[in-house]
Length: 131
Image (cartoon, rainbow, N blue to C red; front, top):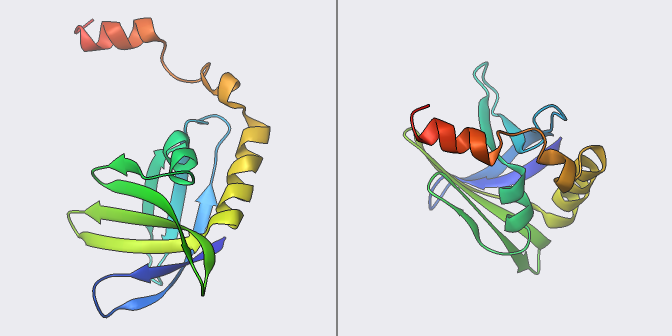
């Protein structure tokens, strides 16, 4: 559980407790659950690769974008920009804490082992060809 700083617009800045989750049966994805004080908590699922790349440089497009930053008051941070039909949010979290969490996921399932969990190139080709 990490606390992320959130901005929902020019004026609204606050904090939201966020649970980072990883399932070794689905190692290509990470799940973030934002505990916003309502029964319908907000879940976001995106690729573990996107998170890894976002810790290094601008990564993602569309609904999820991530990038590293530094500010004197919070140190090394990771920014997450999220877009949905219901609105958008810009979040900031400690980069070292996210990196430590991500490193633990790779001790459970390495990048090499992750390849065995998804569809093969042949399966994807067949799917795209309508087979």
